[in-house]
Amino acid sequence: MQPSVGWIVLLFLIVFPAFWVAICMLLGELSGWRALAREYRGRLASPAGSVGMSSGRMGLTGYRNCLNVSVGAQGLGLSVFPLLAVGSPPLVIPWPAVELVRRDRLFGVFDRLHLRLGGAVTLVLYGSAARLVESWNTRAALAETPAALARAEVERS
Image (cartoon, rainbow, N blue to C red; front, side, top):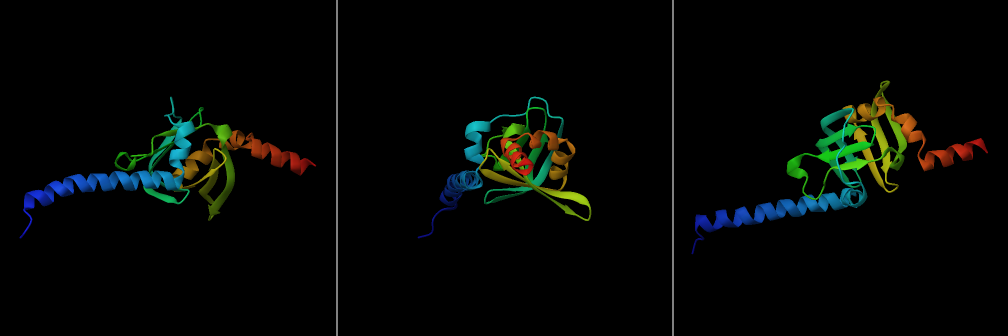
């Protein structure tokens, strides 16, 4: 006996969205986004600059052309393309909670920025998003993080 097309369509309309939500929630958990959202959930009140549809990697999750990055006096703003944002709400990470880990340059042009957010989650930004964060004079803000101050104290000793 063949199942009717109506039942297959109905099953698809129920299973596909449930599967989509489950995968998005899992990616948010694996990346560390949900852990950051517990403390840093929000949007920048007045972004000084932003780059949409950029790429990056947070934890175990790669965000290819779906990451929105903005900078402002409040800190670093991150959000995901709306269709992928289930379980990954917009974030505002204050500059003192953003630690610069490493910069990579390719052919003399800034290309990749490795950051530690909230002391635990690693974020790697590529291309225009990395250049935005770098060009927005975050060196001064990042230099004042507790980890940077501790390194400076060790270097002076």
